[in-house]
Length: 312
Image (cartoon, rainbow, N blue to C red; front, side, top):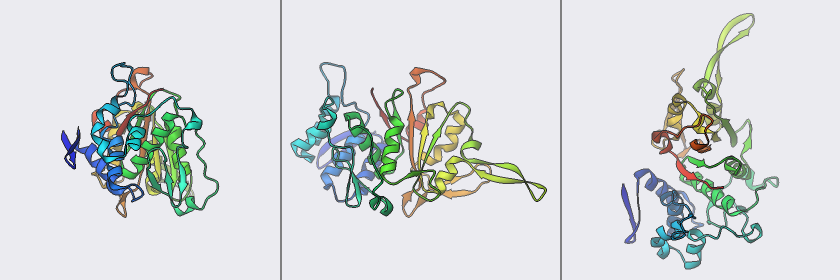
């Protein structure tokens, strides 16, 4: 564990990965947020991200607020209370929309996070964000945007039907990322299961007949398609995937790995282009406790994600 200290203030005792994610967010975010506010927002999502906003304990209803007191000097009082002492029972009409466009950025008013948009998305009049701005949607939207800026995979864990994958898809759509787009800026969703194989996900050779000749041709799986298009990739129901599948895609999640080797062909594909990760990877899963063949993710895989546990 590492103790993060800034301006003489002890922020948290965290692992190296969490600290690197917080620093990446602080450095990668544009000047739309002042430096101290970038530090505080980065800490909110990456150093204190595993601490719930609310608890059933009547003596500690707001554990995040209590844990983050050290960040008060980084923000004015109103911003500190807004980020770390939230009011979950606000009506949707009292909450700001999760995102809106501000010049060349998609901005989350609640968190202040600004995510740079492509030129095509800036000039489009067709992009919408259709989710109702209840508190959990606003916060999860900010988490998705923060993960994009920090270039870290994000794992959303929560019960069925609360919109885990829908929020990721909504942010991607608002950013101009289209499903099945043959060009770059594509959106891919993979529904994993106990029957998923690396061949399905990465690719395989398959027999074809051309000019009355039998031959074998390589066919990309969905993950290679996503990688070649610098896409957004959602791995849904990731804790249903067999161990060999998780091991086979681990390199895609590890920020210290800069290339991916296709197991069958040995082809090496760069994971970094122009200094940025080519894939934006998200995971979603229901808790293992609901059964149906679901397991806890191995710690070696879960630690590669920024993990968020969502309530109803």
